[in-house]
Length: 169
Image 1: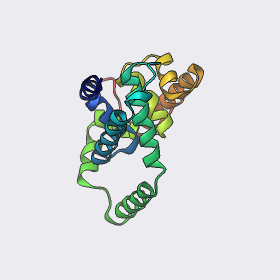
Image 2: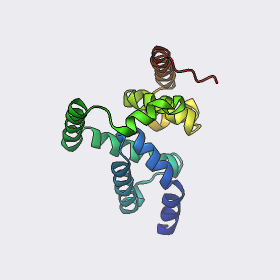
Image 3: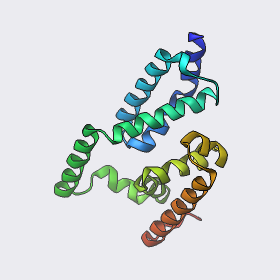
Image 4: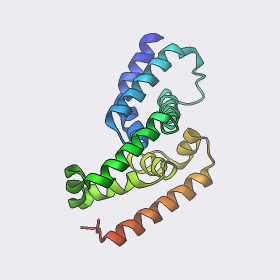
């Protein structure tokens, strides 16, 4: 059984890192979160009931661990430091380069959305999850998923229109 778990973890590792990154916006922290999820998955292998696929189970663990981090004191401290750095030092070179590419602008704007909107957009458009799968994964109703998708699209459209970004070309 242990090798099955390890195979599943290897198979979904990059997807889990991308998922954690959606929430925490930091590559190193996303990797730390996924490492923690992997350790917990192996330690608690008997807790998997088989109600969903193992990938869904791992994704749910990753989402929960990401939310734990976002509620943590460490995250709040890093957010304050980042805000102060931007306030006194202006935008970073990386930030300026991202702004020049309209496609990159789309990704940048997605990361500005609240996590509840960001997660449904990414799961729906990038991970190709169906509405019912997202609802199950996030423990919310299908109507809530649809509402969040609609609101996220509206926010993205409004923001990109204001900035003059044209993604049609």
